[in-house]
Image (tube, rainbow, N blue to C red; front, side, top):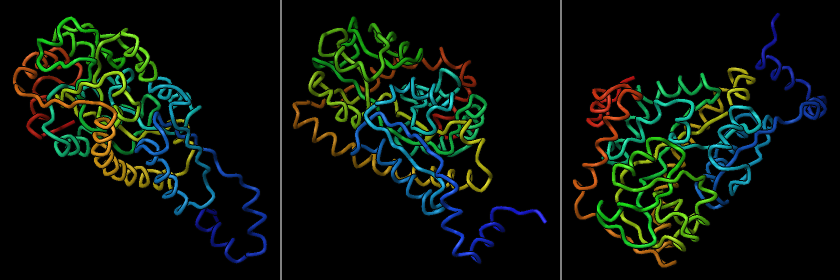
Length: 331
């Protein structure tokens, strides 16, 4: 008779004296989960939530080692570690994953999504399923997607209109789309890892950048770029990711538990992020930040629209982009 895990555990229940010995013989599988931010930020708290969920379902099966504060490197280095299997789990913006799956740039197109609900509906539909399949082929398993919040323009001086951006040196993530976005405004994009951004801004190597409000406070960037223009030009989508090498080494039941934990964790993250964004505004303002509302939205959207046309072929065509904008995402 074939013995599966359920049969094996049933047999153990009949041997209470032997169970402690058997448990000790199987050490917990280590899971290194990398976070870019501190212990109190959603990027780290989500992994505690996921670890606790997994432990309830599979007690003693895994030992999560959650490493905060970008101790394992920036987003790009962590994603490389995920693909190699030296890091088992993390979060990542979809922007960061475009190196391996260019189609993720669909979710980075400026002014594509009206709000968080619009973004999350697209990620939960056929477009999200399509991205998951493409990522898995590159050694990155993404069982759930997340919303980091909207990106806004941060600067050392007020940049209240597109004209003000011309000629400025703007730090961008390592993404051709983000570089082209700011080039469309006449700025000079400079790609830098987030871990190098504070120093680059404080020394004047760059004049401005864009980021979510939560990360703005988390990295204390209000100390060097106190002027915030609430452009909301990109709703920063991301994913809960696992190493494909780690994932493929688990049995079907274990993968199901991890997937369920990731999905629950993603919902928890989105809730935490919404609350953290509000708290981050207060932290930033207490630290000297000044927030400016956009007075002419159309003026910001017009140059950015050219990015849609430039990247259309890479993300499935203008028809697909227009469908996503209308809330009709398809693979």
